[in-house]
Length: 343
Image 1 (cartoon, rainbow, N blue to C red):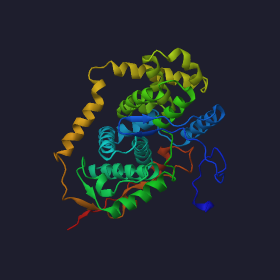
Image 2: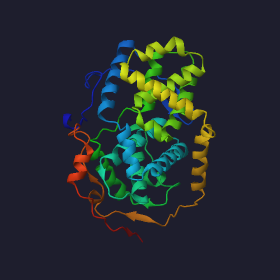
Image 3: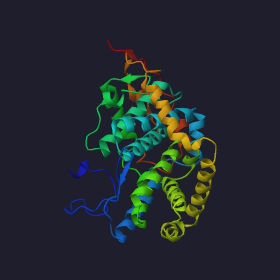
Image 4: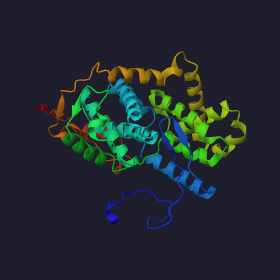
């Protein structure tokens, strides 16, 4: 059984029968329910572990943004996030699943060698990311058919998605429970222990959904985005001064400077005309896709050798200190495979 355990950090021995209280939130639809509180020592230990995990398994910074631009994936990523938001709402999935799926999508496309990203490839990665995330976060994950009911221009055979899941999990070194801005904001709110935390967490989640759509936010680590969102909401509720010290004491000077910059980016974005309705715009676009504006349900694609199309430059668990450019110089673009339609 030990061989089946992922290489994760534990707050206690995994064989210990008493489980620790969860600092995660139960978030479905538009309601947020705070979990039971942990003691201060456990919370700080959990924060420390999350920060360590984040440094190893999350994409952020100028290089990642430049990668998206160079591969012409900025619009594709935004459309993917739109689809994830709409599908989460339609299937009543948790927000944790949504943020985890976006995290899987970002990390996967960064470790894959593709000379040219086509529409079907992006959609297959999006469906696979949500499928994998739901299996790790939901009590009952949706079927492949349910995931593909709305908002896509292609549909994929279940065998294709299963094969793609294995490719993705190998590329991500089976690390699906990564730190996201949502998960980190949850533990921050638990640490603060503020009255009315449920209502504030709803507002924080709204901010983080905007952040998920905003390419500029990819420059910052998930923990930095989380703190900036919490900062903004506490400021709105006139509760910043009494709680800011509890949060900022967790970070060194460089993260503090990044948090301040991130807060300024959020504030400048929020005053831009129309940004406040961003999520409404996302839902509007998704509604258009629901009506079948671009959906062709007769197209069910079967992949050839997907591992040849989505060549893994490196597994996230290995050679972390090496640069992506080294691998791109050594590996040739994958040869395109022909897709055939099913009857």
